[in-house]
Amino acid sequence: MLSQAKHIKCPNCFEREFWKTGDKRLKCKKCRYVFSWRQNPLNVPNEILEEVVSEFILEHSTRIITERVNISRYKLLKILALLRKLMTDKEVQKEYTLIKQPVIGIICREGKFFAEAVQDIEVKDLKSLFKKESFVPESLQKYTALVFKGSLHRLSGDKKEWRINVLERFWGYLKRKLTARGGIRKEKLPLYLGEYSWRYNHRKLTLKEREKILLNLVFQHFKFYNR
Image (cartoon, rainbow, N blue to C red; front, top):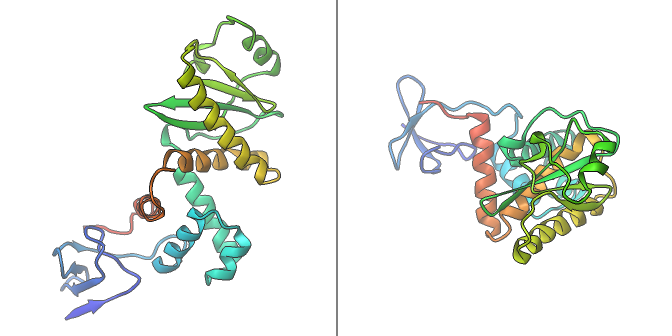
């Protein structure tokens, strides 16, 4: 018996037509992939989730998204928090207990930029660090630059103009995005840094390509499917 379920996609080829097997699993009609399906932890149909991701990629506000998508504000905020967490590079994710004046660390890795909130550093040490030819502690050597009180301070001794320019372009983008929000709670800052780093690193892709990448991150996180 052929089963059609618009909320379910084959994890292998993303088609929506299946056979039901004797053990109550689903078998894709196109690629013959056999899997089990289970509801995602957010209890939101996949088609609604896809609409939210599409609106989120366009950077629409929560008000606009709730007007366009049939979803409560409570569930929408849960989805947005998850998306920002998944957009944050795994290598810079950690538990944050921010100091009074947040310090942003910028990492340049293989042509991509990542920003995170820096921990375990005092203001007096920062001021000393920003002096010419100051020693950079081992814990901070992974950073290309630090941002403190809105100012960018390069830690790398690289003087090549093009590398300085690309770093400043990233910080300019990040600064505009953070300022446009009109204030971010300290505990939420890491999520927004992760989001905007992701957006900047994927800026050359089409909207559809970005949507697909982000949806794949979500589906991988939910682990919807099992063989």
